[in-house]
Amino acid sequence: MINQKKFHIYYLLASEGSTEYNLFAYLTRKRFRELFDNSNIKFSDKIEIAEINISKGKLKGVSNISSFESKYKLIKKKYRGQKRFFILDKDIDDFVKIEDTIKKNKDIVQFIEYNSEYLLLKFSGENPRKPSNFKNLKDFRNYCKIKFKNQFKKEASAFKDQDFEEILKNISDEEIKKSFSVLFSTL
Image (cartoon, rainbow, N blue to C red):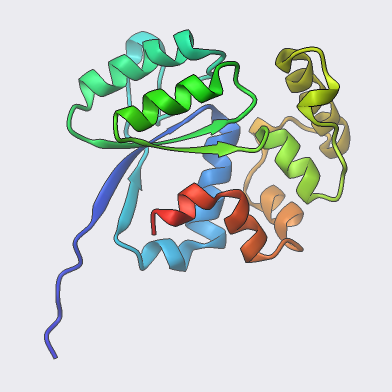
């Protein structure tokens, strides 16, 4: 039997912030570690751009198309020719334009429905209100952050593997894969 060397496809990971980064890390390095370890897809969080405060691929927030594009242009320039994988909340103003920009450049984006706090509240059995119940997305984001902190006694950005494990222990692999369908479609 001949052992063939596996051809790897590398993506630079760019997350909206710490919560999305930590959740991505939990999914790929803990919950579904074997699946990702055995795939030819590899992610790197090595995006570092000091002038706009991006470290370990964390974009430190994206509020609209302008804030995204300013960061995206610098990432594309510095990491020319490399594939990029974005994990962003879907409650960003202009998320459709952001998605179009990413896809037009042949990069990949996994949006979290509607944001990390909302998804984790939903998975924990809560029934959080949806964006349509609010005048604007800013009010919705604030609601999710407050409800999350009241429920879990800390901010989502402080969540670690054991916190995600506690919430997701009763959620099937299929349901998680459905919520992160773009991520799992890369495998």
